[in-house]
Length: 263
Image (tube, rainbow, N blue to C red; front, side, top):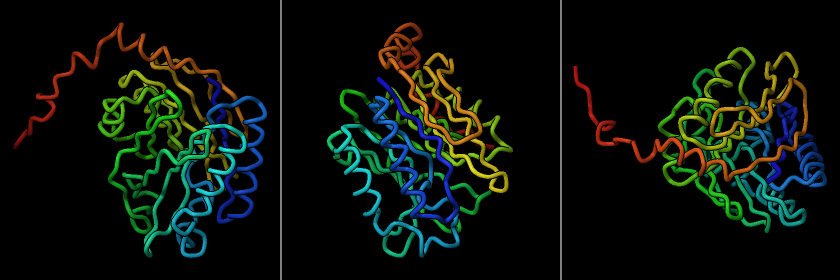
């Protein structure tokens, strides 16, 4: 299956420009044969958290219509990264996923809020798992900081996900953590990880390095530090092979993991 990864240059607070750029790259990816197209985190507004009252998508209506129409018209699955959304006077970081008929198959509010970027001061945390199906592909999705919580990603894999999509706005100073954590999540969950980071000008300090990682941990593709579209061929049948050769899921002892250690 061909995956289109859009490492987008997200304009800070430039909503109209960001929708235009996203559409341009989605159409370009579809024209190049992508069957699943993936966007980065908070691509509609960037991290203009103090301006969410004027920038956030009300109930996600614009984004859902935008992605649904493109998915149906182009006949592609779209993992819509995430966007800032306003619901009932509160703000959320939300991932919408549409299948190739334009049907909403996944909706997820970021569960773990990143205090170093003051997310907890502006955003509400979600609490629901993000499992969905794209054709015959069992998938899951988390957002950026979520990857520092291995038990959260494992819960998606245990529920059947063979690929985990990770849209992000991961900053340059900790990009080595990004790479290491993503490879670890792929290896320990024996699944594909498709992670799409944003890029930005030097002042905002985001440098891409998006990744597509096989269940063995090998890199199929790593993005550079410029805006780009990559089309990557992925054979998801490898997941079953890996899980058969090293039966981690059969050898788990969850009764031990629930043990509470007291002082």
